[in-house]
Length: 361
Image (cartoon, rainbow, N blue to C red):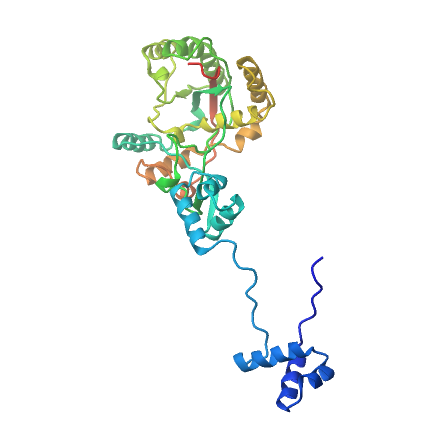
């Protein structure tokens, strides 16, 4: 147990001690009159003579565990390696713990955030994005369907990289990682999903397995239900632009709505893949083999509700306006917030879920 400490001498007793001392009384007499030990009374008088006040001096407390030099060392590592977690910074320094690194980062106003991701945009791509925004001003997005595909690997880890930064520094180049930007735009209504046959998907495979199959069926159903033509949006993946895919679209009467290259932020269904993967990999044993992964992915897909998708509904009119404000460049969060939010119904076609075995090509 810690030692029992006596109470602090009150200001009244301190004044009495000083008054009795001024009268020439001895410390023994002062102890008998006030009940304060002689040594304490002597300290009170000495402090009064030294500092001119009877008020107790502030106590310095426990000395800091980290020296200024160590704190500067931690700060230097945090700035040099913002992508490294706190435990890795502690290992680099070699003299501190993860908890001490975290405390120092907090004192500096730094926190761990998910790294924003950006695509590379050439001037030609920026001009194309701006033209896209101008051409799609007042576009009726209820007449648009979205097609996309993704992969799930048995060895994949759906973890988004993090960086150490201050609040409001998300879009600094040093805090942006990876080749893609991930923005929350999801379709309101999800369509069919399938698994490709064979290895990787080519333009010929896309034409046979997707365009002439589930995509055409899905578009026919939508057009019969809505009573008008539905345009399809496909990104710039090679399998979408190959000759077989172009010929199949022409033969089937499938019309495209142009989509600028390098612009996943303008594809309304990109983030649903992350939602799907995050839920799939939470299922124990899901990555045991490709067949097990497919079964789990299909079950998770079937369990997605309209609410799961609606909470990420893309505001395409607002996105168009934000692109114009950015003059075709990357969108910042502030630019998007300033844009007018218009909630539109997006009919989506999630055409393909290709699962490959770990290490296969």
